[in-house]
Image 1 (spheres, rainbow, N blue to C red):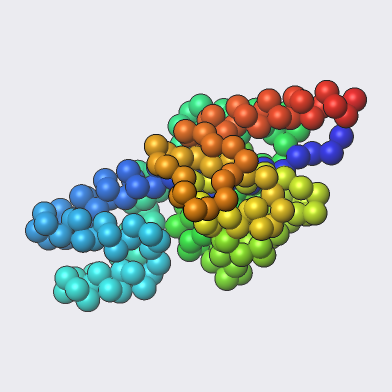
Image 2: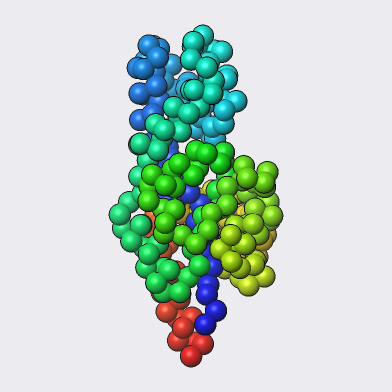
Length: 224
């Protein structure tokens, strides 16, 4: 039987990146003796995406004596300590694979921090493949990103599949252009009114998994 492919975004889809970052920013300002008002600014600096160069900027702005490389390593370790994936989502990843799905993660970001989060959240061992944009300078919404993620799962975009994510442009628009069906995790947000909609809208990742499990059951019934 043909194994269906589903790719999941990581941040704010499988894990709550924004909540994790807020906790980290509070700890960072305290650790380095910064004023409380700087917490919001530091959070904004890492909100979209953090790289070693981000911490070079932070170090310069706040005259921190700690080397940039050490700040980055500490950030990776701190985020790994703080991040988690809901148990029902972890169970759902197992359920998808047991139902015959190829399950992958397609995420933008730096390789070390993204893999640290995947390991710490116990996601790594529950998926068939992972592609991080920093590995080959192929970022969502580029089709090449999705193609490389599919390859990590042992398949090709031409075989079809699904993408689950929270970003309307990077996840949903990019996946649609790559020929994948899409599930948007809304996180209580509204879909941009002028953008073509996703195939499905769900409130959180577990709901997306349940939808896919229903789809796979229908797929089995129509192919036997």
